[in-house]
Image (cartoon, rainbow, N blue to C red):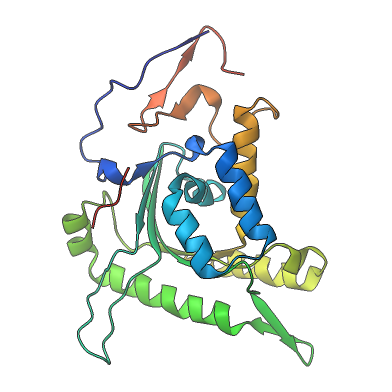
Length: 256
């Protein structure tokens, strides 16, 4: 087995700034253990935001179920997209702007985090509806998407976000335990993502955890290849360019 060296391949022209680049394959066992502990303790939004800002390769795995990011992910945290004008015209600052690249090009998302200690749904008088926390997140993301659509040329040119147009929304909230023993809640969540997921997708932190665990176990040789990019086409850590395996198969910093 010979793994061709991709470290000396120049970063491609026309891609977003290299300082934002991260690969979902760079997650480690330590990061997995830390993330899992935070979720077991039902961490707050503040705790999870801090962890994900410091560990963007964990966040990169949020794009894997969305069929992008196989050729690289770009993570930008706390980026002001609209400055504050007055007390009644506040600025807009998504938790994250995340871009993914696959064979079809680039896809961009504005991401809003809520705590693992929050639920997505409430129930009263046999009616299901979004919790105040989830409803607030949906309102925030709608504003982010709408503003990004109107200012896409400015954002694309000033932030150098390749192929940035109207982004999609991604909300991460709560745990899968809210749904695992409640078929009605699970059906409600699935219906939202089926009807509205093309614009705003809502997922739990367990969705990220599953892919992070799968990646770490793959690195450790504990699972067969099944989820994500074939191991013969894993993105290079430094460039996102594909590193190919010959003769068999192989068992950043912030910019403001």
